[in-house]
Length: 332
Image (tube, rainbow, N blue to C red; front, side):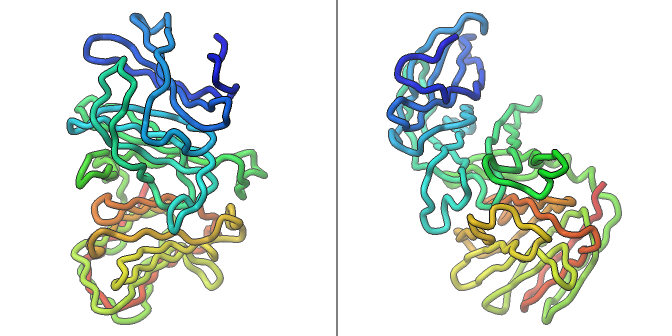
């Protein structure tokens, strides 16, 4: 099939779904001939013979130069449209990576009516390496998201081994307070092996609580008694990935400037931040050999990143005055 008139050859990433009446729809990422991004929709009675319905009409007619990897689903009575717009300029702490991924929440689409009534664009992940997320419905009805942990058009230390990127852990989606909440699927607790630490702890000074390379860290009932709190993972004398929280501004920052011998995409900055809607109370962090995924306040804010430390960089250390229940699990 040929690209329809009005669009460039950047016309890709089909996502197919079926409505309640049995009609099949396919959404694709596209670029108009005026070099702006959009999404087009096809329909089919049998998922074999397709007819172009038209372009999805949103409140963002000129938002980047290409929309990749679109996905549409309905959740909690709302319509959710995920996509990855390319060509968005940084704005404060937002849109810091080379390309972005985010969503609109709105009224369910009344296809083949193509008008989507929705709220403003929100990013899915404030970390360094998250792109092209897609979702599926689990057998029990959960909406599960998996993203690509890596970005196009930048280099990574693993490139010399002909190895590129990874997938994120599966995340269960819900809609709460007008945003998508992302929580690690509950099945991930099956990865826990040895419990390295599990007690309520009073943090008063710099302390290394455990050493691990592949692990899950969970903090609950966090109560802070100083203006800042920080911890770092994959530590040794020269390396660490640093997480820090400012109590007054509620800003949470990740710093990977010392995360390994080579830091990916340094020209786009080595730190990422977000401002939480309420005080930091819970934190869950998964760390693999070359990645981390962070979930703050039960999925209110999520961040993914690639790090490339030495295998011997294994320290997990804390600094700041606080009390919390801390659990650390070695993962299979």
